[in-house]
Length: 202
Image (cartoon, rainbow, N blue to C red; front, top):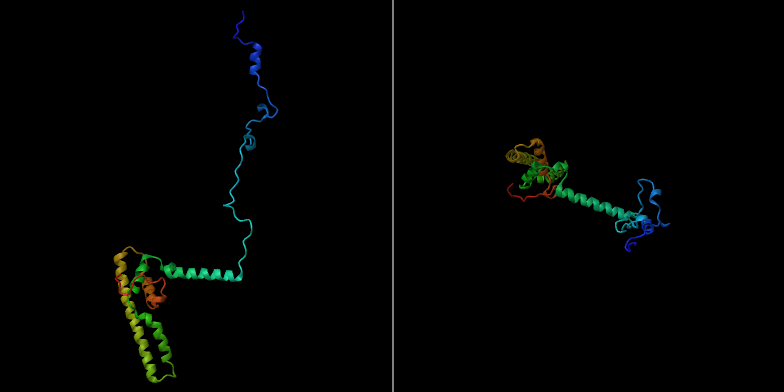
């Protein structure tokens, strides 16, 4: 008597065979190394956000007035930066020390150019002899005062540089000239701007 729970061999054959639909391509027909596309996998590529894109419309060209104003603002910013930080020749701790030595004292050199103008006017041949004599005396006093002041400044810079920067490779002669040229410049016109007050200890 055949068992009620045994399956027929025909049923087993039908179960082992899976129908192939016409929509799917047979695997045997694909070449080796075939990579399915995103469309076949059902993946959608996200669109790039428009916030980070560059504007497609060309920028409006500047007018002459706008370009002139932009150049003026750039020059003013450059001048302010130079006034605040100085240029390449002002870099280095030794240069800063030399500036502080000059800025912490009153120098005769600040009156040098003003006195030179007075001497130039007073030494004119149209002036009386007494005025020309006083102009020449003033010129000699200014020159002597600048010379003495320069020697004192140089000696102080030399002392401080050797104490604070014993391994410095900066030439002392260059520092002396740098400090003397600063000493004969009006305090308000010095660049970089003074960082110490007059009389402050350096």
